[in-house]
Length: 191
Image 1 (cartoon, helix red, strand yellow):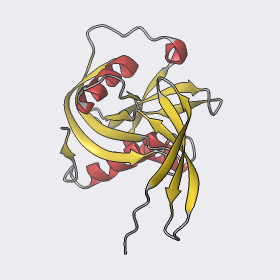
Image 2 (cartoon, helix red, strand yellow; image 1 turned 90 degrees about the vertical axis):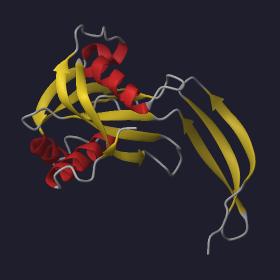
Image 3 (spheres, rainbow, N blue to C red; image 1 turned 120 degrees about the vertical axis):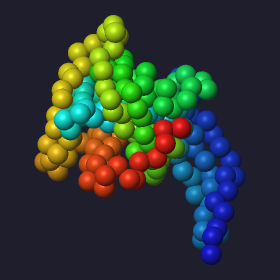
Image 4 (tube, one colour; image 1 turned 45 degrees about the vertical axis):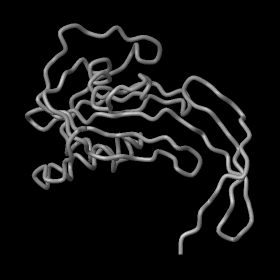
């Protein structure tokens, strides 16, 4: 039996350029209502860029919310209205890793924190990689991005050793390794 959880009321707590915060009063399966805080986000894309010898490009950058430099996939917000998500992925790969890809496939879609946020991230697999003609000028926390090429199996081992903890990177790397092990049969078209 399915129950519809309807929003009875919404109070805006914060509205910003990247996310907004609301408190919703929602009908519950038990028949009552409960208040739930929700972070509404633009969403993001991430890229597992895999070269011809099985290495992935990872970036390490500072993330203020956790006060650490984290190993991540090249990724970014869906902040260009109407832009195709594979185009967003290509833009982020060029900006953060100085790479272009000859082909893209869809690996996975993730809800990053569904207990309180609606943020989704679509992870693409990019192959047939070449350097961009001119390097993108990085600023703010991206100014000191560390770029590294790591064997995909070693990157998966880094996940299990607790060295890669970014959720999108964990999901993307594990999905890429599984897709590779299945001969790429699980890949979906990028668009």
